[in-house]
Structures are given as C-alpha cells and as structure tokens.
Length: 103
Image (spheres, rainbow, N blue to C red):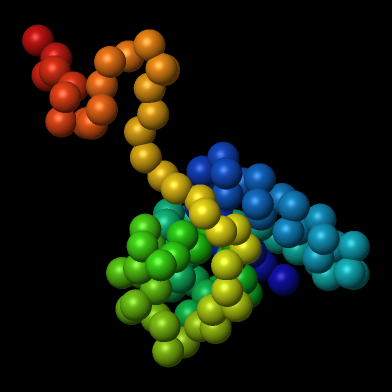
C-alpha cells in the first residue's frame, strides 16, 4: 500500500501513525512525500492508495474538485484544525494587515 503525503511535519506525523496502524494489520506500507498538488492526482491515477493529508473542505478544495469522481472521500480524520499565522500574546496585533512592511 502506498500513502501519498505532503512534506509538512503535521502530515509526516499523520502518515507515520497511519503507516504503523496499517502495518499492524499486515499491510506493507510505503509513504511517498509529494507536493500538495500531486496528492490527489496520485490517488486518482492509481500511483497511491490513500492519504491522510487532505485538508478539506477548504485548503485543498481545488485539487479535490479536479479528481472528485476518481477518488473516495472517507471523511475527516481530524476536525476543527485551522491554519493561520500566530504571534506571541505580547505582540499588539489583531490582524495581518497591521504588520508593518520591512524597510
């Protein structure tokens, strides 16, 4: 079995855990790191069997949309996850727009 994964630390971790679980079920597992744009294409064309790196419904929506008839969405493996920019609490900012340009 081949898992398609993105080269992000969070997805390396998810793929590693999934790989261990599948190996405990007697699967021979290979994890292939690819660019996010390739994750869905690799599953749709049969180069990979699954991924835990699908950030749906928003981040990877365009990639999913292009192959949705050729893959099966088994649902979320994590709910409530967010991506964004964070700063320490002592920084007096409320939005990205408040950042001053570098000189």
